[in-house]
Image (cartoon, rainbow, N blue to C red; front, side, top):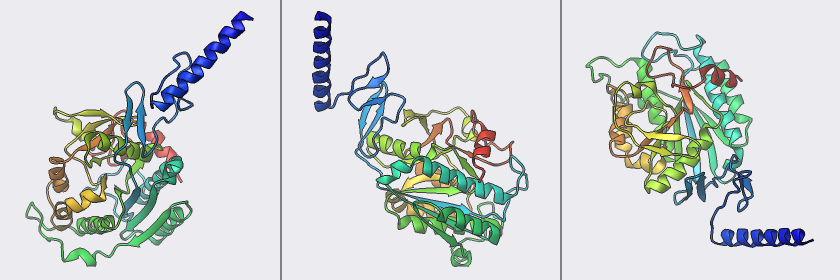
Amino acid sequence: MKVKNKANKKSWFKKIFIKICRLLDYEIIDQSNFYLPITNQYINEDLSKPGKKSLTIPMGKVEITRPVKSLTIIMRTCASVNMLTQSKKRLFDKEKSEYTIRSLNSLIKSINYSKELFNNINLELIVVDHNSDKKVTDKIKSIISENFFKSSFIALNVDDFKNDINPINEKKEKVIFNQMSNMANIHQSLILAKKSQDLVYFVEDDYIHSIEALKEMILTYEKLSSMLKTEIVLCPTDYPYLYTEIGSTEVLLGDKRHWRSIKETLCTFLMSKEMVIKYWDQLTKMCKFEHYPFEKPLHNIYEKEYCFSPIPSLAIHLTNINSVFGLSPNVDWKKNWDESEL
């Protein structure tokens, strides 16, 4: 009987203690079973609250001062061109349309995996296509129309932007038409980004995303921009070419992954509307003049602003297997490819 009273007193004290911790906004952990009584969760669950707090064990809590209001995904597609600047075949040796459809499907899967996240974050997916076969565009339209979020399809008219493009590039060579269409597509995407509400994810049609990619990117954007008190840029891919030289970098902890600062990306990246407007002239330089490297205007922005990429990668760029601009290290490429099948 005495033992029972002692147990009751212990239980009563524990309840009071938990209430006090809750009032003081403290978190406690039961080390015997990894249970967090304040939030009624276990540490292997999603502990972060979008727009409110980021919680990482044992690093503690980061108050979110820069919540994400909306995400606009702008996907640039062109299933008629296998490789923009080379003739080599891609990993898995498929038709370009297969990469386009799988890239889109991997994005849809990542969105659906994070569906609860988008209850409070407006989401829109826009596909800007140039010259893909009607069978492909019909499939794209079908895929994006059967979902809970707003979506649209735009057929790019290169002639609308042709006069803005310098026909001679930085190498004093003539700009090929495929590159012109790529520059026009980027220009169209930037114009759409100006009409967005908050974050914009510019993505090409040969990136296969892991299922947790978008959730990690949004929660990490909130956390790191709140910590650094500034807008940032996120690249979803851990590019192998960034490891070809020894250089300094900063490593920060995102939601579930480490993220390292980088000074270069290709043309798939996440940026805020605020930053698009701030660097409009720099961004549109890519649409008007072919630099070497092509992304040089982006790299100039990263000299002034933080840009981070994840370790390990959240998306793989499906180029030729020997390309240093493609396959991220320490990722199961075949698994990601198989899971992206429609």
